[in-house]
Image 1: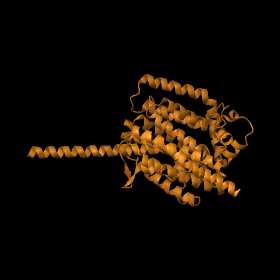
Image 2 (image 1 turned 90 degrees about the vertical axis):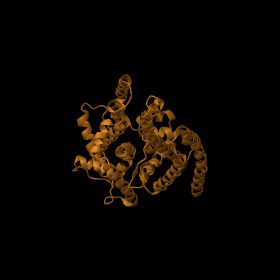
Image 3 (image 1 turned 30 degrees about the horizontal axis):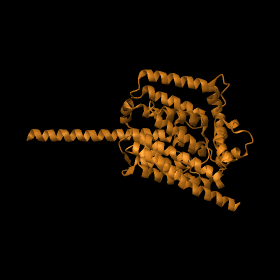
Image 4 (image 1 turned 60 degrees about the vertical axis):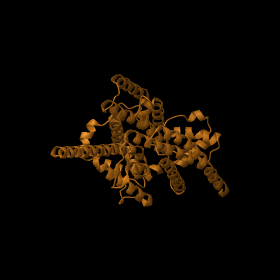
Length: 409
């Protein structure tokens, strides 16, 4: 067994340079296309993400990990490949099956493959931020905000293993990147929507709602006929896929969606709170539940060493969130473009939905990584907007001062 283990590790090490070369081909193309693109930073990010793939791999040896289940199910499945085609967990088995059974990929190789997919989610996130926000922003006096966002450890940890995390993160970032230029990136929108739908149908519903809100109420140049056509397309899609979406929360045959959802969320919350890292949120007010989902664990309730690291990251989240609690944010919101309003609504809607059914710290830490980048984008855009306004005010003051001096002369 030890010899087989070392051979598997060697295979992965030999694959890394091959993946790196593929990266260079794509990164070179992106560098030619975008003047702001930093190939050097993306290469550093690649190795940083690989380190977290290794950390998760070691972590999975001594902790419960879904990655083992995904690999073994696909490896042991006796039916035909197409029988695995479905939504949710089944889709991950469907994706994994040909790599494991046709190409002979080991568990280690599959971990590397999913880690690679997660990495490209970060590249797309970088493109989404930089393409829409030209202004550089620094926080805590000297720290570049985008660099900080890109290197948050918790984000990398949960997107570096076999499972839904890497694929859903990639799908969401592809959606965000494509949504910022919908007329030019229709294919990206279609592919990302399909990825999100087959992995988490309910997340697809929230994406449509948030995206629709930004499309109709954000400041943009999209013609009315495109808005009408887009709205109809979203509604038709939701009607056609409603059974799949509602089946996720066992509401496919429900006659009273609100009552049955509340009953489901209550039962789900109780079952999750019975786990070792459960949080009894039954007596929590709604703001307390939201705070728990966004910012806990926070030092005092940190579960072990990893919990302390997550607590540090959550504290930084808390500091960043605090930057939008200003009167200027209301003025900014009125003028905000569709991307900002969509990201904010996707984040808020998903947070509200999750707080009804989440009462386990481990699951909360993992689930919120899906949507944190949407809120980071809102914060980043607002801070860049404020910085731009400050620069304008300084220039105006200088102009007034120089005019006054010239009049005196």
